[in-house]
Amino acid sequence: AQDPAITEAVAAQARLTGESRLLLRDKVDDYVNEIAPFFSLAAYYRFGAAIGKRIVNFCFEVVMNPTEFEVQAARAPVGAVRVYVINHRANMDPLILAYALLRRVPMSYAVGEWALVWPLDWLFRAFGSYFVRRGETDPLYHVVLERFIQLLAGKGAVTGFFVEGGLSRDGRLRPPRTGLLEYLIKLRIDQPDREIVFFPVGLNY
Image 1 (cartoon, helix red, strand yellow):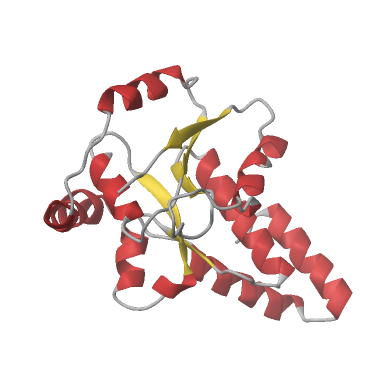
Image 2 (cartoon, rainbow, N blue to C red):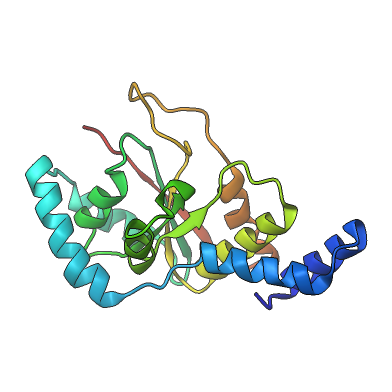
């Protein structure tokens, strides 16, 4: 919330609209509290893994190519920001990916505002997911979201990115939504020497 880019955005919006900087700062705090997760190792690897295993194994037989995952991971430069670019077939996608990659990498996802209800919001936050409003017009919100994603990725968190931004009904890729992708790429403004590696992940049912 004290990021210089956010402070600058608050000042710019105050000059443009005449709103109080104090009220705008309160709005920033509300946005941060809404977006940010509180990743819990116990929730992810004990509670989440146990529940996820039961649900996924009851509904599906998961088939994955672990060799391909290891080959991809070995090609990434040391210290690179890792982004998994994923197609979106079903609402179960994040759970299936978390289960399939459980012993390899914990992944942070963007979740829509539909999940901002208890107990879903608590579960998603504990699993490291962050919340994104669709169709939000407040530019201050987008600055907060952008800086959050950049700080998250810049600290080494692994990000899962559903490039379609919504479910595919027929299995074909929908046109990409590039907002979050743009935020990630702009991380290079702060860290010009930082590599960003995109791993393709295919899901099918």
